[in-house]
Image 1 (tube, rainbow, N blue to C red):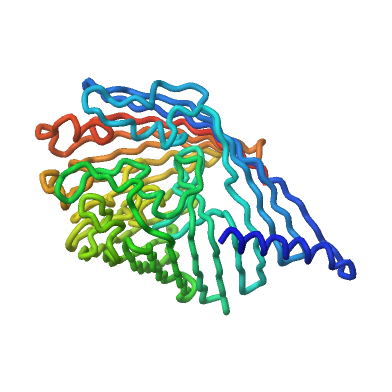
Image 2: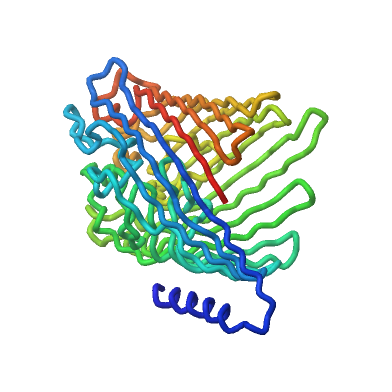
Amino acid sequence: MKRFATVIFLLGILKTGIAQEEKRKFIVNPDLHFRTFWMNTNYPGQDFKEDYALGMTMNLGANFSYRENWKLQVGYRTFANVVSSEIWEPDPTTGQGNRYETGLFDLLETKDRFFGKLETLSLEYSKQNFGIKIGRMGINSDWVNSQDGRLSPTAIEGIHVWYAPNDLWKFSVWGIERMSVRGSSEWLSVGETVGIYPTGRTVSGKPAQYFGNTSSDWVAIWEVDRKMGKDSKIHFSNTFAQNLFSTFWVAFEKNKKIESGILTVGIQTGYQQGIGTGGNENPELKYKEPEDRNYSLSGRIGWRNSRWVTHLNYSHVGGSGRWLSPREWGKDAWYTFVPRERNEGYEKVDAFVGYGEYRMEKIPLSIYGHLGFHWLSDTKDAAANKYNFPRYRQVNLGIKYQPKKIKNLDFHLILVSKEPLNPEKLNPNQIYNKVEMIHFNGIVNWKWN
């Protein structure tokens, strides 16, 4: 893949150099992104380690356009741990490592305070109804996506091809060979990325050890999008992780204008099965059981206008075995996803989430909130509950502000509270990093592109 990418880049440069007889149109646009992120986690009334961190990152890059068809994107990102507690030290009570603040930096080298990586380097050729892109780039698919909730997003190295024969249809294919996941300074093979985040436990209840022991060479994703009239659309996808699993996904959404605003109705359904050896032939090192067969259903009903955005969401996961998707690869696709927690890793999930957002009329400020109830598989059943996570309630309160005088600058505050639904039955390992906690984020973003 690296040699192929190099050849493509050289051909693009050669084309630019020899096309003297053509009218040139070469445009350079800077692509700068600065982010500072404050994060702290507390456990009121509990004797657990409390952590904090202030991180900063700057992406220095540019977009080069030649005529109307060729684009070259380059971006190098630097990271700094400005100040923090000893986030690399485990909690003395449970022996577990920090789950939140370490994700701002490099989970593989948690003591590194300054580092960088070449995050984007891609060449793209596109026309009105066709495009191909190769190299290092961002991605936003159902189960592999940027999950941009720390200092930097997840990026992939590979190829992306799309074709839109008309205004109604769009076909997309992704081929992924390597990834630079959020919370890592390295570009790693697909198998190497699995397990950078906390690994939970095996189906037998022992600590999972699939990090560094998972075999998977590539991920292939295909997507089909179809518009249905002016207000409806349907989306199909398949995420095929070689030697791990295959996830099929279908989503339908309809937006209908009514007198008071827009009414939204959506439904999602998915099916997942294990494939190959599940990452390793050794049962104690296996990521996914090849015999697993899982399904999910998720629904939404919502309403919005110029000031309000509201929706109610429900998801159900069932079947045999755990529904899995590496947390390193992106957030959940279910409507019930709430930032700062995920519901993959369970045989059964029932989740109900409400969301409301109000946008101020005279100032560019919005206030929003999530309220979610998540009923998970019994913690005593290790085969059905990977992370030993109790049933919980989560509340997120957020404020976003975008000053009008400074373009592309925004401020974002998030307060998260997670509480167990059955607190009297929990041991310390089921609380730390999970529930009975208050988590705060303060984020400043500025972009120039």
